[in-house]
Structures are given as C-alpha cells and as structure tokens.
Image (cartoon, rainbow, N blue to C red; front, side):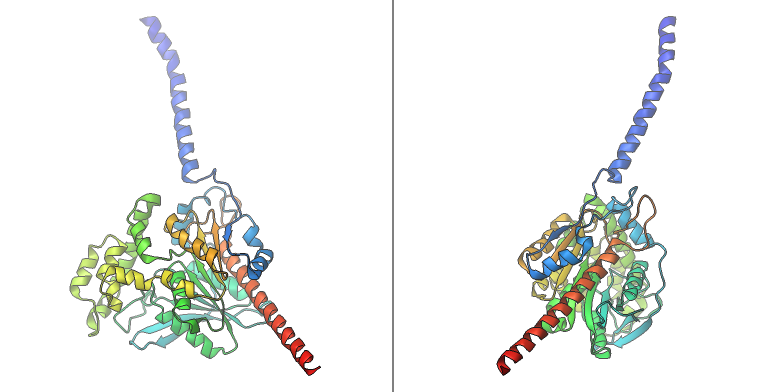
Length: 427
C-alpha cells in the first residue's frame, strides 16, 4: 500500500502537467476557432458579365484582384470586425469641416444633410459629388462616415451626407415620423438640392448597410433619378427586408444577439422623440404603441408596432415588400457596385444569392464578395492595430475613379465618332 501511494505521488505532477497542457490546448483551439485564424486571405470573389466596362474595371481597380489582408490576430473574425466598427467606427478619425443644410419636406418634415467641399481637383478634372446615405440610425458625425468623407474629399470629391430623419441628437422632429428602412424622400430631397445647386456636377450614389437599400431603391424607383448619376455603390446591405428579418430570429452567427442590440438602439432613438410623435395631430403613433415599444425585444416587433405606421402600411409584410430595394434594383441601368462580406454576421449567406443573380443577369452590375470584413468593418493592418483607412474606403474611391475615367473615355470616343461622321458627310 505504501508503494502504491509512493507511485501515485510521483505521478501526480505529471498528471497536473498533462491537465495544464490540455487546458492550454483547449484555450488555443477555442481562440483559433473564434478568431478564425486558420482562414486564408484571398482576393475578393467577383461576379459580373463579361462586358467592356467590367474588363476595364478589372484592369484599372487593383483592389479587385489583390488580397484583402485584415489584421492578423483578430481581423479574420467577422464578429470582431463588426463590434470594432460598431463601438469605435474607425481609428484616428479625421474631422472634416462641412455645412449643415435644412430642407423642408411636403409633409412638414425637415430633412438635413451635411455638405463637404472637395479639398482639391478630381483626377479627371470633372466636378463629381458623392451623395452618401449612412447605415441605420446614422448620420454625418459617425466615425466611419467622417473617415470616408475625408478620404473622398482629398481625392477631389464633394460629399453630401444625409442625416437620417430623427438620428441627429438635439435636432427636433417637425413631423410625426422618423427614417424607415426604405423611405427615399429625404435622400431624394438631398440629391435634388445638389443637382440644382451644382448644375454641372456628376453624382456618385453611395449607401452603407440600410443606406445601400435606400440608394438602390431610389435609383430604381424612377428612371429620372439616374440622371447625371455616374454609378451606384452599395456596401453590406441585405437587399430584402422580409428575408433579413426572418434570419434575425436565428441564433446562427449570434444574429439574434445583434437583433437585440439593434432593437435596443432603435427603442432609445424612437423614445427620444416621444413628445414630438405624440403631440402632433397628424401622428399615426399613440400612447399604446409607445407603451408596447418598451416591451419589444426584436426589430420585427418595433417595425410592426411603430415603423410601418409612419407610412400607413396595413401590414408588416406590405411594409417590408414596399421598402425593399429587391423589387426596384433590376431597373437600375447605371453601373452598380454591390459589396458584401462572407463573414458579415448581420447578413445571412442566403441573402447573397440576390446580388449574385443580379450580377450574372445584368451587364451593369458587379458583385464583390470578400472573405473577411464583417459588417462595415474591412479593417486592414499587419498584426494587431488597424490602419485609419479601411479597404472599403479605398475601394469605393478606386472604383469611382475608374468609372469617372471610363465615362470620360466614352465621351471622347463619342465626340471623335461624331466628328468623323461630320467630316465624311461634308466630303
């Protein structure tokens, strides 16, 4: 018995060492899995028809064929990319100087947007304005918007950034409604102002997340909306509100948790305008609706209780159908760039069939799908610290520059052809 105890005593340290190694191995396994460290970096997947403009873009946009390399230690996690964007927006955020514009709407609402002049000439010499629609409940003061605006200004673009109705702190509502998933009224008012104020300017319509839905819906609602628009750009949108909300009730990719966070943010935003929504005689929102809002735990509940009533939709399904760009985007004829990330925890993989099918069928659409990037993250960096400018910021400007040059070349070709025809006829 003493011999057995002596043997056991001598084996205990080895057993503890084995347990420590197993614990370390388990932690490392979890870290590698959660941070997705084994996932390889790669260039984006590109879906488009073989056209003259797509071949031109492949040649003149290096970021289309170059590997997107996120920060090594955490950048391959779509969750961390998304959380960092959500909490910080960007690092070393610049502070572009702009002028706030107020536009009265027909229903009594007051749309606002911020206007930022270019900080130099555009490479083509043209006057080009980015008309930008931010993500859900966002505005021009958000860090990711400020970073993109500053970069665009430095490349010769004027920028107009919509402030979603009700999103700006300390700005009171003048009508009993706030922004919705697909209402284009405020965006249309901003675009109209820019067209009138700058008769020679060409437009680039850019939308982030929910803003991408609004931009694509605006362009497809009326063909006249595409006048003087060089191209449209949509980043990280879900394309169909109905299908998006159906996926938000699933725990896959922690989507239900994100739903809860977004719901809490929307509740705070709506309740901050409680007095305005209740005091106006034309309001469709009553005390009972706002009381039900307190108990809401999902965006679907908020949409059914509050959001659909701003535009008098009779049902939740009607609200989602009428407000989704998926029913309008096929009418867009200008060049259209659609960008998503495979590891975006807010956009289910099944939703990516929509832009993929569009790009396969429509000659003006190019769909770019990155392996990493999360939701509006797309941070770049060597090891730990991200760079101030993201892949997304650089790629939008690179693509837009290429479209500007393409349009300039096409105009020169048409001018030469017209001149040659006149010479032939006169001869």
